[in-house]
Length: 206
Length: 206
DNA sequence: TTAGATTCTGGCCATGCGGTCAAAAAATGA
DNA sequence: TCATTTTTTGACCGCATGGCCAGAATCTAA
Image (cartoon, rainbow over all chains, first blue to last red; front, side):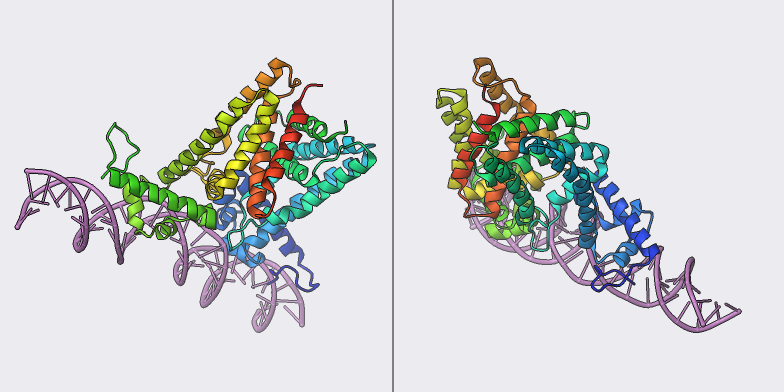
């Protein structure tokens, strides 16, 4: 039995790793299909064509399973988008590349992005507080704020409240994906480019 | 027994009207305090110091109760904000007044605004679809879009995608209130004014 | 005063949840 | 081969939910 979150350095067997991956995949599919609130362990198990107990056997609980989903997708996005941001020549172009890059990832991995959004939106701890949103969004905001400050110091951006901007940009991007989830035929890339334009105009110098 | 949503023109007794108002108030307080997911009928009944069955007696179900809360708060906001928007001399000022006005309402009626946000965020129908968000946000978007178009025709605003802007503005405002809920000491009015500035700059002509 | 309508209570129901467990099954290796 | 370990199963647990209802309490009006 190896279900804890790797408390010591013990290795996981190959088989166990495969089962975990299979269950994580089933969780992504289930959440994307029926939404987080209806993605019970029983339903995820059914999707994985596996008994419910197996999930409890391989994971500490639903929370650990969700952590794994979030970490996996989040890492994937960062790997796809960060290099593109760094390749840009100006902060303004980097900001546009960020919005555009995440949108392209979403287009190519719709289920994963949907599942991620759903978990961020709905997962709560036992006190009822958001498990990823709320105060946990702090690192996200701080990353954006770093970008803004760089632009301000470089003279590309005017003097604005970086926290308000970070909260607004993150919200606008989340809303873009939610809108696209509800209206699957919506042109996500056009939306992303338009949003990039709005953001740049909101904060550029002059 | 008069619990249906006024299917015919029958009047509600004074006592019944008072009970309904009391329960609605208890629902607002409970949701604002513990969040929608934990605001069960039992908990709302306890807040109202009333037996659980009373809610079922006076309301068709939890959904009707939530509808009443939403309608009440929403109407109140509109009554407070719409006149202020209409009083402005330019579309740009109207846009700023909108953001500022809703923020001032929230500041003066924190519990009501919190409850409204929570219901919008979490209430779902029996299919798991959002009961107020999603496709139901359409009228909200259309109102914003009318404002934008007026500004475009008047030459105040440049040519931008009104749908993307409406989705983004609504999201940024919702996020502002959510951030304020999580950080109660946050300066909401300053945030609102800053957001107004961001929005205006994003779409103004030139 | 009293019959009938209205309102309220508190227990009950079915459902679904996350999680646990003994026992069965499968894999492993001496 | 066969004992040991790993993995899986499906039933079961406690809990919370929204809703229901028989009977009690209260109000109303003749």
